[in-house]
Image 1 (cartoon, rainbow, N blue to C red):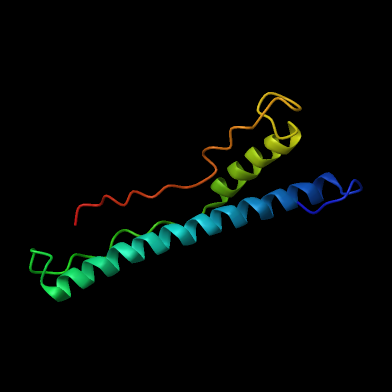
Image 2 (cartoon, helix red, strand yellow):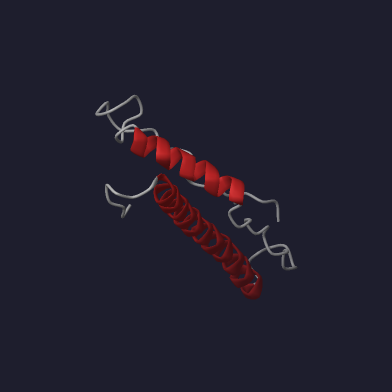
Length: 111
């Protein structure tokens, strides 16, 4: 984060929201790419006649774009991480548990 000691709490919160938005948008892009790859592989199999189904399946369910609630949740988790000095139990207590900061997509759809 790029704020100085003289940043206001509003500036810091805005920076956390920007960081959270960036993380979630990156994750969303990765999930969209994964779904596109699945679809492309299905199309290729169908075109080669190796899908064994005889017809092309519908496009997989697309992941939803990050919601405001998700952005705020991630920003809150980032704030906790920063406020605790990077540790989960206080200053210098070791690595924080930042699991859950990423979205997940279920790619095991029935096609």
